[in-house]
Length: 401
Ligand SMILES: [Zn+2]
Ligand SMILES: [Zn+2]
Image 1: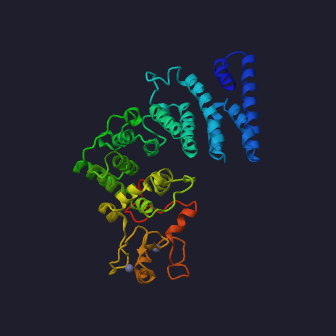
Image 2: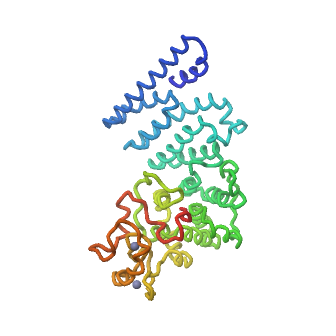
Image 3: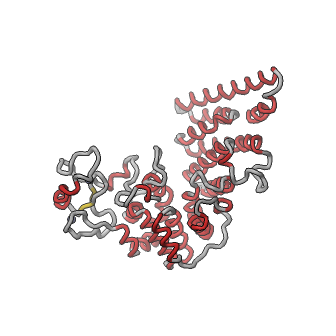
């Protein structure tokens, strides 16, 4: 009902005093609804807050706030119910702003919703629906919303290319997952929007990768999450084949710390990373494990990846102390200095190397000789801090999950 008022609001805005009064009443009603909803939210009466949040989205400017509130509701199914209603209202508002045919393939803004201001809150609503549906294990709903985002925003400003493949794999749609990853990894599309956001889903290629492709990706590591999901889908389709091994190698080299945590069977994080992030940084690696770690824990996949020599070469570390040739026998065996830059086989080596390491060991932590010189990597997942996935890569901007 409220969104109809909003629709009328724009039609009437330029007219008489009477219509201005009508607009003001609508605005007051949405303002009142939002206030009431927030009060229920603050007092943890989430169920009661929902109907007022739905009314508050009659003012389209409130949509982003409602999406954020839904993201913080303890009951994910309640939050999902709220956003499904918000999405319906938003759809009508977007049609009002961008044209009745904007959701059709023939619509003028089709595929470019991000470029229209009215399109963004709508896309963000769908983005939160993807997350909530995943959390309540409604994988088909998550896939449907993710596909819709990519269809409306072919450039994928919301990063669905990192999310959709693992959802498709979860649903047993291995060919679609691999097709999607292959489109996003294809250098010919570099810097361009993918047709339908990569969701045309043609039969995937089983041909091994060319040396030029491997060289291009080894240099930039722009698509590590697609490499890893591509490896998973390839393995499910064709078992241990050369293409799967190549994806696995590029994924492990793209983010050795992420692969080390997967192989060390560090427990999956129970929530995505919430605070600010460096794009494609260690926080995204945390999110990758939140979405897909269990897919890697299937015993056949885990064994396949653990025994792969390229993966072992990328993941297993050598002691940083000069002259010590000790090498990890298993991922994350060595402890690291608090700066996350140096790894040692034991305390003796860490102490011996301190003179050299001191100058590059930055941070406000006490020096290595203090009472707790070592930092146990395994304890990281119990905090909300990001994973140390990027700990020993050459530069921060190469760390892509
Ligand atoms: Zn050593
Ligand atoms: Zn250090």
